[in-house]
Length: 292
Image 1 (cartoon, rainbow, N blue to C red):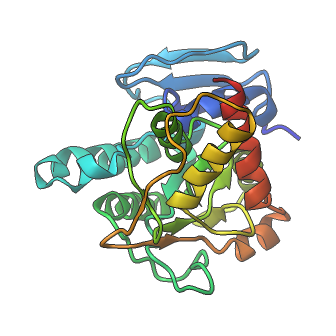
Image 2: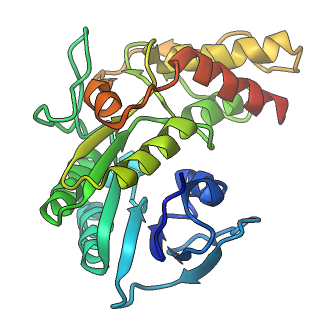
C-alpha cells in the first residue's frame, strides 16, 4: 500500500540517493500527494513521476505531513577539515532542526559511520551506544539526536547499491585508466540496496512509530573495498572490455574500519527481509558495466 499523505517534503533530492527516491515516488506515495523538493546547489531532475512536485529554494512556515530528510554534507574528507566544521554542522544538524520545525513526521537518513567500527563477529544493533568513526559520523549523530527529540525516526544505511555508488564508480575509473586509486584490503563494509531502503521507508511510515532507529542494510557477506574493486575488474574481464589494468591495487588503511549494521531488530519490527549482499552487489556491478 502506498503512503497516503497530502503534503510531503523531500530534501536532498538532487543527490545520489535522492535521485533513486525520485524515480520511485509512484511506489512510495499516493499520486494525490503534493511534494515539495528542497533544492540546494545542484539542479533537481523530476523525471516522469505522476506526482505534483514543486522545487523550492527555502523552507516556508507551511506544515508538512511528512518529511524525508536526505540532504547532508556527506564528503568525509571535506567534513574532516577543521575550517569546514561550522558549514558541516549547519548542513547536517542546523537544517535538520528546521526540517523538524515544519514537518509533523520526519525520517532522517543517517549513516553506518554513526555506529563506527564494530567487532569482528557482528554489527552494532539499532540501540547499541554509537561510536562515530569520522567527523561526518559525529555530525550525523548530532542530527539524529535532533530528530529523535522531535519524535521523528532515523534510518541508518551503508553504501547504497541501485543508485550511483562511489566505490563501484571509483573502481571503474581506475580500470578504464582514468584514475589511479588504491583500495583498502582491511577496511570492511556491507552495502544497502535501494529496494530494501524504499521498503524500509514505506514500512516505517505505515507503522506510525516515533523516536525509533532503524538499520537498512543487506544480509550476508561483508566486503573490503579491495574486494568490491576486484569484482568490478573481473566483470570487465568477463565482458572482454578494453581494461587498462590487469589487477587492482590493494593497500592497508592506517585506521581500518568495519562498518556493519545489525538489522535484526528492524527486520523483526517491520516484518522485512533484506537482500543478500553478494547478489545485490553483483547485480549493481553488472548493470554498471553494461552501461559502459
